[in-house]
Image (cartoon, rainbow, N blue to C red; front, top):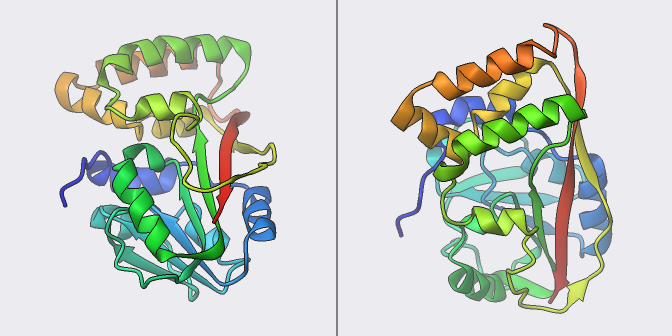
Length: 244
């Protein structure tokens, strides 16, 4: 199966610049699912995979982009596999937790649901996690809005699911109440710029138009954000849970 590969060309930057999920998310998932094997679907460069290994005996982390997997950190309880969400290669009824973090919007949803039904054990938990627009202080936020205007035409199909917190992805099983959790990072200005260059839309913008918009964002941020100053970046997480 072919897939829309948005990130292989920026795999190293993706690994270095994407935020990491908080321990509170891992604890929430582990406390609500049976113990055993977790499947991290569309794991990218493993931002969540290694954290899951703190609470699960085994983590199988899959992604169709080998370039991203090559950047993922090793861990004795994490097994990385190059495989799609729709054709995982996992045995029947072998998974206690299936989690897709910032990935479900890329899936062929009906085919993924069929695969999920096959590999999940009775009582297994499905978790869809996404984060949308970041929150900084008001002044920087206005500049980020300008930047989103520049990349807006380049968002690929599927971004609409992130914007609505995955609410229009039909869960295959009964819903489970999800906690309110926020992801945070303390970043300098250039770390924020590195992050926005990992957006799928920015990757396309840079390929087609060059760095002018990114350079303009740098100049805008430099006027209100001194070199070396660290600021707290926040992403409220959208979490949807369901139990088989």
